[in-house]
Image (cartoon, rainbow, N blue to C red; front, side, top):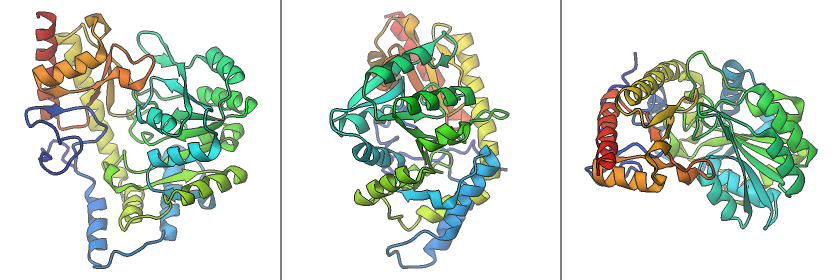
Length: 387
């Protein structure tokens, strides 16, 4: 029903992702090359029919759309009175760090992890406390002993959790989340759970919201939710925070209001309502298409470039490539491929400890672009090996 093979020209459109050299194919930043669902575009058109774009407020349908979606898709009961708007997850995390910790405090993270979390922490004069994930060579898991030891010895008022995980694509189990919740509760650590990738899941798989894992998890957490990654709406700055703990909610609301992040733009509510009430069919087809793309990359590498291995993850469209057999710095690899082969992937070292020797590839594009990107990647690695 939906055409994910359509090529949409994005160069010279003020696109952050595509605003690079015209000879380079961008497969780096987490931004899909698919049109937003027509149901959402129709909602924008209806809003555009009214010619005034003044200050707005959230209609009741906004909270109900979130509530219905998470109950239906993820079995999480959200009370709408415990849900409130914020203008983007990253700025909200920065705001919450300022409100819930002090300069010099350490903020815990399981690494490798989304690179902008580091900026959020350091820009607020806090310290990054990295707790490296265990890597078996095939998959990632939480080093629970190290997590306990770290939280017991380092003052960490906050932990930023990526659930599901970016860049590895790992879906944390309910038991994993319960363990995190129990340890954080024991040592007085609040969990900021970024769940922006939660809908981008291999068909047949399921993610567990952190707040649904246990009563403890629910009590000590702030959950960051948004339609933006799922429906390719990142430029709209529309998101939400779910905070069941009333004391914690009061602090979080105050922080978001103080930093002027609580006012929705003219399209923020319309986008979320349309996405969560009418976007389900589009998402189901998208997830099938993304799964096919993942399989294409995996099979291509196994056949054409066995020196590079894709670490399979059941979440996100971001593929984690193990390039350690090449014995090259990941930043060097990223720059080399961009310069010599015309394909831009993210260096794994951008994601902290455990990312060195890896590259992150964005596979959320039409299959024809994916094929071209893989050919360029193969040519670049081939020329590097034989140089």
